[in-house]
Each structure stands twice: as C-alpha cells, then as structure tokens.
Image 1 (cartoon, rainbow, N blue to C red):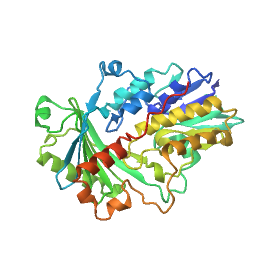
Image 2 (image 1 turned 180 degrees about the vertical axis):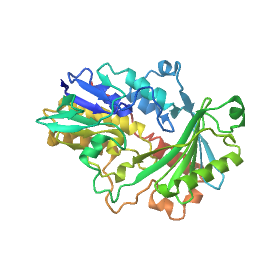
Image 3 (image 1 turned 90 degrees about the vertical axis):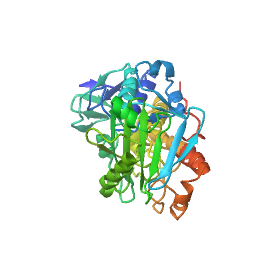
Image 4 (image 1 turned 60 degrees about the vertical axis):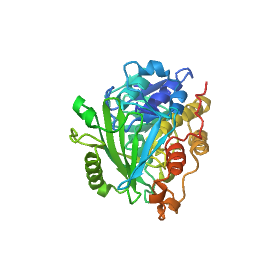
Length: 374
C-alpha cells in the first residue's frame, strides 16, 4: 500500500490545477486518471484571459506548437433569424484545443501520477480512503467530471431539480477545400440559441480546426435539433458541406441547480464533479480552475479533513459563484424575463448580445481573475 496526503481522481484542468497548486504545501498528492494523456476531450474549447492569469500561463510559451486563437468578436443569433456581430476590439478570450490544454496543465505537475488507471474500488479503512486496494490517503478529491466515481460515492442528491445538460459536438482539422468553404472566422465564434430557449449551438474555428456543437437540457430532442442546425449552417455556407465522423456526446450540471454535496468527511468535489458549470453558458473551464485554487487554499490550512473543516471550501465556492438556486428557480440558462416573449427581439440587439450574453454570461468580464494562494 502506498500512502499520500490526498488522492485526486481526474487529471483534467481541475485535478491538474489542484495538484500543481499544492506542490509547495508539504501535502503529497497522487493524481489518477482513467485515460492516458494527451487524450481527446469533447469541449468547444475557449478560455478567457482571466483563466490564463489564474493559471499563470505565459501566452507566448503556450502558443509554441499549440493552438491559441485570439477572440475579439462574437456572432450571436437565434436560430431562424439573422445574427448580430459585436466587435470587442480587445482580445476577450482564446480558442484552445482541449487535448493540448489539458496535457499542458498536466505536464506542469511534478508529483506522482497514475494515468490510464480506472478507479475500480473506493473503500474507507480507518481514517483513509483506499483506491483500488493500492493507494491510500485521508483526503479524496473528485475531479473526474460529471460521472466521477467520487461524486457517485457522495450521491447525486435528490436529483429532481437538477438540470443536466447534454451536448454533442465534433472537432476536426479542415482540409484546404473545407477551410475555403467555411465562412466562420477564427476570431469570431458563433452562438446560436434554440427558439425554445432550452439550449444553444456554436461554431468555433481555431486556425484550421473547426468545432461545431449543440447543448440542450432536453436531451430527448438533442439529435433532431443538432441535425437541423448543422443542415441550416451548411445551407448558409457557415460550415463546410462535408463533416467527418460522429458527433461525440457529454453531459454536465449547471451550478445553480446541482444538488451534489461539495464536501464530506475526507472528501471534496471540484470542477464538473461538483456541478460547477456556469448556469448561463454551461462553460466549465473557469469554474474548474477556480474551484481547484479555492480547494488548495482550504487544504493548505485545514487542521484535519473532517466535513466541518472542509466546509470552508463550500463557503468559498458560494462567495465566488453565488448560492445555488432554490427549488422554485427555473432550470436552464436564460432568466424568465428573457423567456417571456422578449428573446427574439433581444437577440437582435447589439447592446443585449454584447453586454449581457457575451460579456456577462459567457465571458464574466466583471469578475476579476482568482489569484493563486502562495
């Protein structure tokens, strides 16, 4: 048996950030992931300057041999009506490929890792959690996404009011002919809201790579909506007429409506494992990174790993992201006042699509970066 101070299950942005943030703390962490890296990850793939600042990433260094697409504009519309394009002039976000981004974050971790290793058993023995009968630690951190085994260990809550968003997308490198046929521009991601306001689609070009997808809370109709959207975009020339391969699926919880507990005795959940995706956009990279940094600060100062000691993490999450909504709150991304007949007009407004949809809901430009504790 090998003993550690904590075991982190999941080596994506949340898990890697936590392991990296604790390296000078005296806490010895083991990072486990069922996949080997670099690995494919279904994700539209953009990160804001705030995320890069919180991660202390040198942009010039990152851009060497990796995709880093500056974003200065957004094209936003409701399906079936013309889109509105807003120029932010400054760089407001960056397009990345998750296979590169996640591998880069993992490569910064100096501590021990176990990749290509599925969690087959979790057992409580005395004051430790034992993973696969091989590794033990008093603290277990779930960072393995929506289906994380540590989250299942804690239970998903009653589940009656949770909003689980299902999404499908494809990312591929375009051929020269496809690139010429594609009208979508790299510095201008496109967001297209479904007419029933239960989801939205996107087109995101990153150099020669193109990412297309759609996410909805009503996953029974996901395939139909995706097919209709793709066909409309082909007919309009926004995307190439020939798309390769299958669209891959994934799921996540929206923060305001997730009911998963964040802590228990010797257990913490971070990132998508905790259901931290932004309620208005479904974006999860910034919440994953920031929750890891908040967790690291609590772990550094915790006298023990009891639920009462770790509750400081839950309080920090509430201060940073707000309190979760009550049972009477609506489930999906858009407020009731948008749903009640105003959406079509608002989605044609330059002011609304820029100041509310883009800058507030998707970019969170009013929220300063979360600094890493030292």
